[in-house]
Image (cartoon, rainbow, N blue to C red; front, side):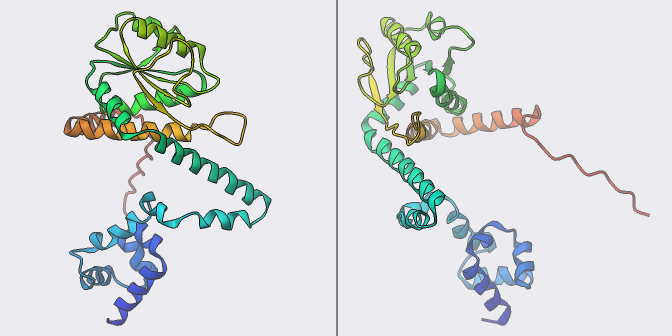
Length: 281
C-alpha cells in the first residue's frame, strides 16, 4: 500500500473503537491523512465506500459479540482489589440472573403471551411498588407496538376500577415478585372473576391461592442486596417487546415515528440552543 494507506490501516488496527465512533474527518485528522485516503483504503479492502468499511467496527461496539468474550474480564476484576472483586461478584450475579430468567421462559410460553396480547383489543398492564417501574416501561414502549396496552391503575385508585368494563375479550399482564403485592393479587382475582385472561411475570408459578394465570413467565430475582433483582424480569420483558414490535411491522414503525415527532414538536427532548449569528465585518 502507499504510505498514507499504510498509516490509515495501522490506525484502524490499533484503534478499532475510535474508528467505529469518529466521523471520517476526525479520523483523518488523528491519522494525519486526507479523508480521501480513508475512502481509498475502504475501496482497497473491497468495500463500496467508507461507511460500509466502518460498519463492522461500529457493530463490534454493541453487545452482539459479548457471548464470545466469556467471563475473563470478571476474573481480571476479581484480582484488582476488594472493591473491584465485589463489583465482579455483583456483575456475575446479574449475568446469572438474566441468563437463568431467559432460560426459564420457554419460547412456547412467550409466543402464547405475544399472541394473547395481539389478539385482544385491550391488554391491561399492572404492578405495584418497585415492580411498577417494570410495568410503566413495558407500557410506555409497548403501546407503540400494540395500541391496546393500558397501564392500570391509571390514577391513584385501584386497578380494579379500570377493569370494571373489561371482559373475556381483554387480557391482564401482571408483574409481582416475592414478597407478593396484595393489590396485584386482588387485581388478578378480580380479573379472573370477569373472565379476563391473565399473563403473570413472577419468580414462581404459584404465588397465592386462587391465582391461576393462563400464561406464566417465571423469572429469577436473586440479588446480593436486600431487594429483588429486576434485571431478569427486564430481560424477559424486552424479549416480549421485541416480539410485539416484530409482529407490528410497518404499522408499529409508523407509530414510533409519530410518537417521536410529537415529542420533538412539543419540546420533550432537550436540544442545544442555536448559536447566535455573528455579523461579519
